[in-house]
Image (cartoon, rainbow, N blue to C red; front, top):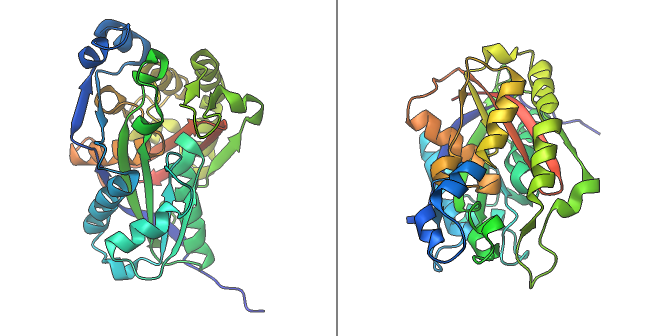
Amino acid sequence: MRIMRGAPGAKVLAFGGYQPAGVVTNDDLAKTIDTDDAWIQNRVGIKERRIAGPEESEIDLAVQAGGKALAASGLSAADIDLVVVATCTLEAQIPNAAARVAHRLGVQAPGAFDVNAACAGFCYALSAAADAIRGGSATNVLVVGTEKLSQWIDWNDRATAVIFADGAGAAVVGPAETPGIGPVVWGSAGDKHDAIIVRDRESFLHQEGQTVFRWATTALHPVAKEACERAGVDPAELAAFVPHQANLRIIDTIARKLGADKAVIAKDIVLAGNTSAASIPLAMSRMIERGEVQSGDLALLLGFGAGLTYAGQVVEIP
């Protein structure tokens, strides 16, 4: 048997992001549930969030973000031979999202599969893409995180209605002579699986906020530090820290414990809300668009969420 050998390394060629047009402010929510702007900002740090209309699916969001990433990469659809979509909000599990996204973008006959690691999904998918390129299973990979959480939220439940939102982010990953995506550090805390849950097809998303907050602010900074160590990077060398946009207090706590004092900290949650698997690539694409980071800089990505799952890796910014 002949063993396939791939590229020496893999790197992100481009990011792309997309948010639906509908804006829901804290004042809008205060009209229908017992809350107000000050309470929401103090609790989770969110001012507004984007919500897709009934005619716009998570597939539509993914196609928009994937198309932007593909255009920015300089590649064509014909150059992509694997599509991986991270999502946990499909209305139906069959067919998968990846094959539909690939078809809509004109990618012919690629490998296509979905990843459900909830809010850590993009980091899981990014690692799978890098491994496929190094292993010789793929040459160029489109990785998309897309969520329409609004269809799984009880809009009368202020514990979740104030947090979650819709959006998509994507990255094109290609071969490199030297690694541009560091080793992943991933894992799970299955004993806390019911801290974030949709119990059945007739239920809405339920979250034990305090359980998640305590876990995230105590268990995840060692994961972030280990991802830096495996990549041979000191946290002080990071130009950006892009954690899952779960809660502004969680982001600030992990960043402080990480010690990435020179890094720009992604705080996309303030105007985007929590978009689960979409949040990291969406935040990364917006940082690049605003010129907050430069090509060649190093960024630490850290996803975490339902499962409970987590994953992080250092990447070179395209």
